Length: 277
Image (cartoon, rainbow, N blue to C red; front, side, top):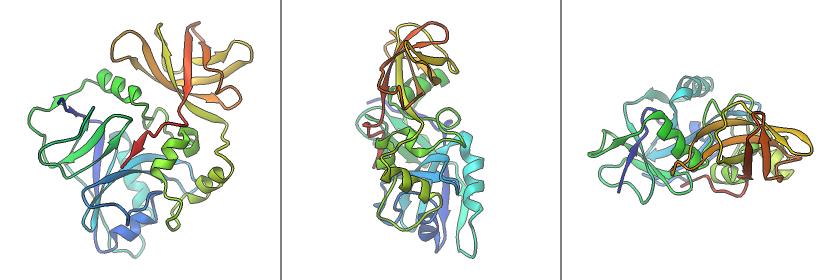
């Protein structure tokens, strides 16, 4: 079994203290109290208006929680959490823990926590780099992420991203609709009640020809439809794959032409379980 280390792309915050669980439960969309010790789950961390800060992982370790976040979002996530530290016994600290991704099966050896990462992978947290680890180059990492249909901070996840636009499967895997209130809940709940009717939807893209981030997607008949947000070579090298957003009026079209004249197929991701426990 091959293990892929992605610690340069994900970092870990430790949330501890006597109020850690209740504090975090009021800040994230997933139910922290229902997490099993040593197991993890995805969760939304939202701005007060309900738009995205980051898609994070929660890993319960007894009475504390490890939060895995995109390394590029680390400052923003920490600032967002500290913003609500009022009269609570909570400590937020950065760690040197290592985050690894397994493309199949599950981690072996000393593992602090694990959770599903993508359709076929497992993300695990370790206190040191496991023996035999394989480090990915940036392009390889992008290929695996896009192949797994995982939105990335700074590409698909920005301060203006509405969670429902990332797909109903992602929302279902990262939101508890039975827990108590949390920051940003209103927009998530309202859109869920209305059938996730958002202006744009995340799609998986593929073409035998190369295309690039920022290219406009056009329907053959109706004109501008969306934009490419992530691109990488496919695993077998036979195509270019990517992620992007397409307007809801044309998301079922399935075939687009990029602004460079490339023919690109698109598949809506609403039905995919992108993350899970």
